[in-house]
Length: 325
Image (cartoon, rainbow, N blue to C red; front, side):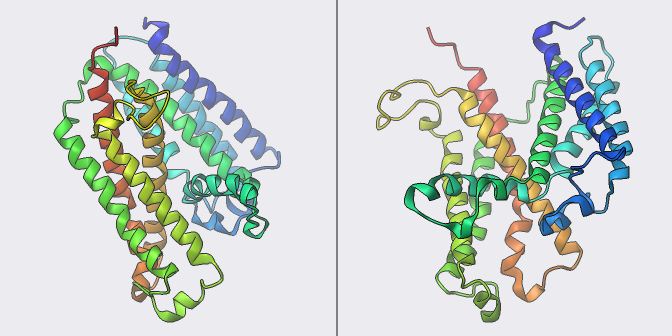
């Protein structure tokens, strides 16, 4: 029997699955609030891979959650059995990368702007946090939580069977450079549009966003570029020890999770957003002539994978550091 220290992840994942499964069954029985398909009031709901499902699909979701609960409970037990991992990882990937769409990233990106807007008197056309985080998007965040709990349980189960030798410091450094470079293509196009330069789009397309849309795009680009700068901290000294210009913290050791948690979450949301754009590209939604509007985003899964690899490498390196006296 495994110790409670490592087994709690499996119990937490099982609890999530049982609660969400009960909610799915309630949707199938007529409870309002089904977050996908025609029940999603947001026009961007068509971005979801589950846009075609109906509340009756709640029974299938409940069955999926039952399988997830059984799998999670199996991960709490010891032994040499590997079967639970074969189910655990597909469940985790489905919840983390398939269920969400690009609105999850938009909610995260616009939240800081919406929080500071009242301080400076910006109206933002009356937009609020409720607009950035409607129930269908909060539901995506909830599903990502379930996937992460399942992944944590799977990792805890297989910790003694894998040493993660692939994530060397050298590969982590390369992954950081990739994670910094890939989003810059997107940033350059959005900054150009904000300056009135039709980079990758037609002048007519550019004119359609002159009401402030491209300023919002420039904000997102700057947000991404700032994230790229922070990504460098995964291989820089200031990512391990607080720099001198931070009073009260200077010289202190940076808690690894302070970098790992946000970097890991960002790797998820940018991958999800990139997969959304790829789905739309395959569906023929975009014009080849307007490549600047969609091609940079199609590379975001590479950005997300590189950031995830860099984060794992950083975590493993920091975990091997000697504990402070």
